[in-house]
Image 1: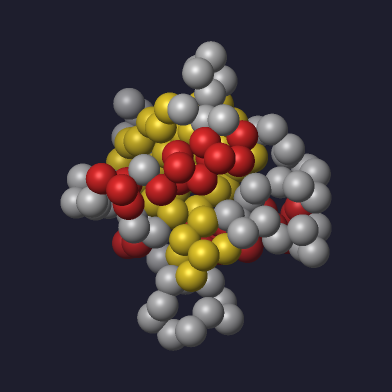
Image 2: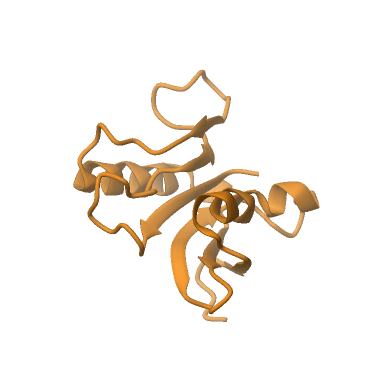
Length: 118
């Protein structure tokens, strides 16, 4: 399942921001292949934001759900987009949370279809 962090509420405008972290196809990747993308510390935060938004905008059919990753106090740490969680294998559906649990202790994932309010 493709996924990407588009908002980091912990690091915001820091060089350590997680914006752009995920598993997706980006410009420069092998054609048709999705790749793992880690923290992109060599990009300015504004460039990271633009890149993450472009990935989602250029492939809306691949990012049909939004997600939030929260800690056990229900504080939102990250927001992003992902593929269809309804059809994903369980391990794939929790890939963003698995990353965030190791990175910053997130324990809760919330998903909704793009455009829905709940």
